Image (cartoon, rainbow, N blue to C red; front, side, top):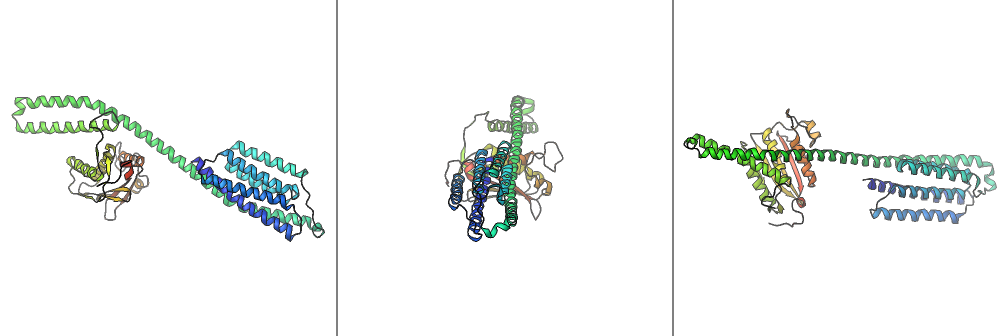
Length: 424
């Protein structure tokens, strides 16, 4: 991000130098031709051509997307100071009314450069100014202008002031905008780092809990199997049915624990499962419905051109979280629509619940931003947003005009199946 900002600032310097070149050409022509003050055109033209060549080289450097360092910006400004010094030396030295253009270079250096290089630029500009007070090429004035020297000097100072002010305001404004964009981006990166550290802590806790739950679940499973073989309990149909249901729920808990360990890379089960996007979503919806009971559920899988993918437990859990939140808000009806838009998969989950508060929509994906007044609420969407962001996708939410809410997940298909091509 720093390189990008410095490249933008270098481009601004190039634009400013183009204006300086145009201004020098216009000034030289007016002074030499209109005012009749003879100037050393050859060396002054050579300086202008050198600045043009420097601009072309700088633009080529920017186009190559090469990094731009503080040292390079410092050298560019030093060259500008040198060019200004040569032009002033050839046109009257410190008595030239355009001598105050040094302040323009110093102001740019104060904004663009690090402290040491900005102060170094100040020292160089001061030394050049001082040197021009005693060493310069005298400006031969025609007899017609000898009595107007002071008036000409005031006019030149006014033109210099207007020129410097007109250049400083837009260019410093743009430079500050570049700096603010960089600071905002760095703040976003810090926020993401904090969120990812939070997720890592949650993952460690979940993995540890899965390890701890493994032993008691296995013990309960053994005890239930012993009970089911006991004649007293086996002869009672109601108890047998309840024991079977308990065993089913324990098996489900063990499956969930195994899924947590597999997601964290600590278990090695069946290996990589390859499927297609359409089949993955169909199986996901079927698995979710097997343990949840919405009164009405509408599912539309509108994927025509299917894509091969690797089954992803994390993505499956993400969609489970979204569906669970929708079910909690709207037990009466949930709708899910899946379609492909270009190279992206779009999954929209709709419900007929009360919708999102404006405060939740404004901070979607932030941890613990929820209208549910219970500990730990708000982590579901936080995890959804971060998992999708890691995969290059996005999550958006809105309230529906007919009531309820829509959560839309957009995910690039390439993230689901890197290196795979489309297939049926």
